[in-house]
Image (cartoon, rainbow, N blue to C red; front, side):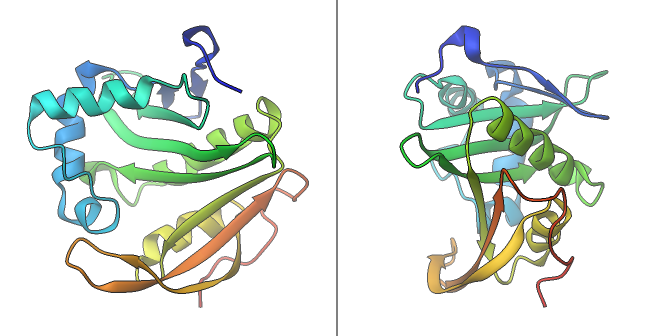
Amino acid sequence: MALTIDDMPTLSTQRLVLRPPQPADAEDALALLQDEQVARWYPAPDVVDLASAAAWCTRGADWSRGDHATWHGVDPVTGRLVVNISLFSIDAEHSTAKVSYRVVPWQRRKGYAREAVLAVTSWAFAERGLARVQLEHSVANTASCGVAFGSGYGLEGTLRSAFVTADGVRQDVHVHGRLATDAPIPWGTSCQ
């Protein structure tokens, strides 16, 4: 199901307003995407300046194909970008999707990723009628493993050599999943 501009919801959490990306987010988006950790795990090599960052934001706000929904979680007071989060690979036939996120470097380790993942997952189940959302991350990305567990995504397995980092190194990938029928936090809290 394709989403129109009128379907693009704003979600609220305790500390964030999640809304579609805007070109005005370009400066913070550029800083986010050029951060070493983000570039390692979730690169956007075509974003090299403010103009390309603004274009990236505009693309994220275009939900018309129905295969993704992207939000920028912003501080409700300052309006500054805190987290970029997307549902992608939305498969209406199978009622599934994947979720990924990036947090600006100056707001990491404060629980914002978990907050955004919980809000978007709840929206995906309640408003889009999805049955399953999947979260994948490199096994070496232990922070994302913590976000997955903290958001109620249980570890389901490991895909061997399934991801290549920006430096060309192959990585194993943890697959986490959450079902609409799962309890809020169904599994443990560690990738170990």
